[in-house]
Length: 371
Ligand SMILES: Nc1nc2c(ncn2[C@@H]2O[C@H](COP(=O)(O)OP(=O)(O)OP(=O)(O)O)[C@@H](O)[C@H]2O)c(=O)[nH]1
Ligand SMILES: [Mg+2]
Ligand SMILES: [Zn+2]
Image 1 (tube, helix red, strand yellow):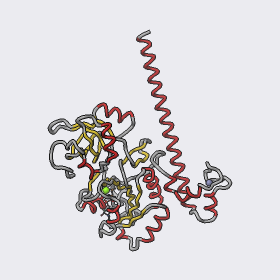
Image 2 (cartoon, rainbow, N blue to C red):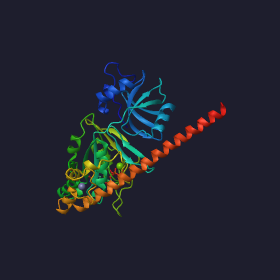
Image 3 (cartoon, rainbow, N blue to C red):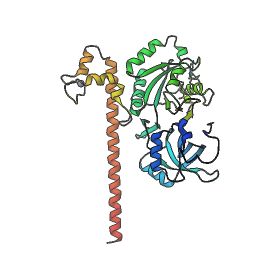
Image 4 (tube, protein in one colour):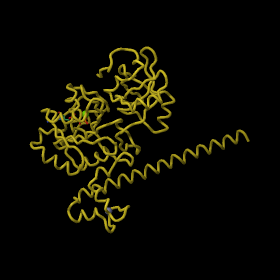
């Protein structure tokens, strides 16, 4: 499946160690952190895929499965972290073929985070340079959903790029591109077809060697098909969308990182059913940068752009410069982020109270034992 970066067995040379990980996204910044945190005998590796506490990791000498040590697992649990594709780990390998142990997680760079089903933030992919927001030019085309994905992508800290796939089905892609540009100020929009291989160079240009991107979008958008086209071989299964409603069949089930020949790394993800926004993972100011620009001249600094006097956003609405529908979407997403922030605050408070209750009980118990 994945080609080892360096086919020779054994450890990388001590001078400029782990250089062979550069095509996998290893950077001087990571090397610096690693120097501080890597215990002797341990080495860094990038998570290619993670599932049920196990991670498939690319190291300087090849691919290996690993599981967190008990101590590291406890830390992950305490900090509410789950390993994900794109993470950088420090691991230790026993001599021979035994399974490696993960010891530590290097601080995550830009990562894509959504509100998980459990009400907790869920990191989908880490150490990203680019987020490809994939939408098909068939019945998959849906601007409100794209706005939500844009909020996540901007929140990641990586660069969002909209990829309109299946351009071969659209006839003229120009009008679609223009509509997307209307809701995505400041974002590059590419129209591509994996079928006819048009526009793929635009994607390649976003992914030089050493860079990492993730493909996100709903099921059936054509994410895995794009990955296969860029890989030059079918590494992932793809399936036609249902004829009845044009929806995908959730063909991809695991988030997985691939190294593209002569390019960077690309993480394919399963179709997102619900794009839940969370307070820490979404960035509405960048998503609605047109509104944010007007908001700067509102009379009140904490203007909510509702009924306040001197509201520049309301003025833009009244003068027809701001589309009422876009304003409505903005309000809806803002409410959602505020709700999730409040919910997460409540959860943190509950956890803190529980912790103090436990400590109180422990103290009582200790007093009983040693009066
Ligand atoms: N005509 C045309 N069809 C495409 C293109 N790209 C993808 N498709 C088709 O769209 C369908 C869905 O593609 P997938 O790549 O499986 O979609 P996905 O986004 O990976 O879906 P999930 O894995 O379920 O999230 C398949 O039948 C593809 O052949 C394209 O550029 N042109
Ligand atoms: Mg897929
Ligand atoms: Zn205002």
